[in-house]
Image 1: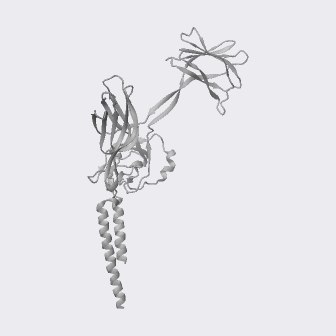
Image 2: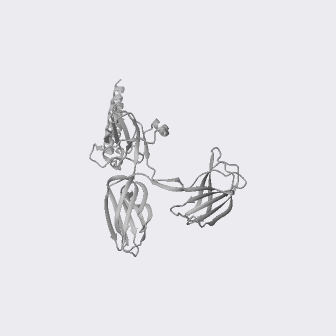
Image 3: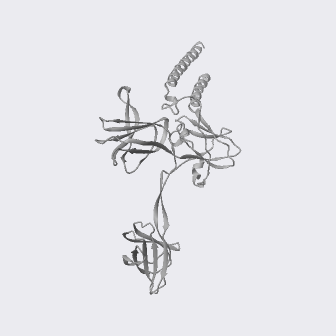
Length: 410
């Protein structure tokens, strides 16, 4: 019986070890000093990874795991910046005048005033001018209520008025009965869009048109599965203006009745192709190929100018020692996600850390990375396991018969 148990555990151990084997590795360069580093996950590396990078480990020279976090760029970041106006201050016996210059003659309908706290209300008027000589009313006799910045020493007051594009604006505040208020700056908030950093994923592009279906087809295929976060498309037409419906489709397969495999297209995004601007799409998918279908209706087909796919920059954040050698190992897609204490201290890691660029992965076996079937669903393993189970049952039956025979003889 002990022999049987030993054989059973050997089988389990063999299958477990095989299932946890790594199939690619990346050697990290030596770091100059101890500290946190970010390792870019380029398309050459990402092609071997599953979503969440759960099949990746960083090991030191003692084969011990080194904790890491995953950071990624924000695709689009919207921020607001306060832009100051040039202004002049004039004081008379009855008022304080603040003359602002709108140099680009932007159309505006508000002005932000940064004012020192004051428990006083003032009456004011706003005028506009194109030549600094002739002034025209914009907003008459409104109140600047008491200014209270709470725990701060100033408050941002917004002055709303009808949309206008004067070169100069004059804010006149009545001061005949009290001391003037202290206006520190005047300006406006300007929206600023900052795009995340991307790296192009190279692929093969093909273009065709079906005149009967009145559709054009653009296909971008990669040599293996890749992370695709953004698609840039540029088209041109024989006519100056065009606006066409289009979609991004991913070829997929599914099993239908009687075990047959059916191919179909899964819609990732629907959009419009326009002559007024290039098309930029955010898809965030893991693809080996995608197709863009353009509905031409009764119009002449468009010409493809360019089609590019991009992967959003992602990084492994880890603490490395200058006295150690490290290697990234990539395993099968069913490898469990690691759980490190480092995730509780992500806010303590500096935002600006040195980058540690790496090359491509060294693949152990010449096979397509991340196959669709895991080891335990592989046909060879299933048949091998069946044969071993039959042999094991036979061995147990013979051993049991011998034990029964020995008992009968006694």
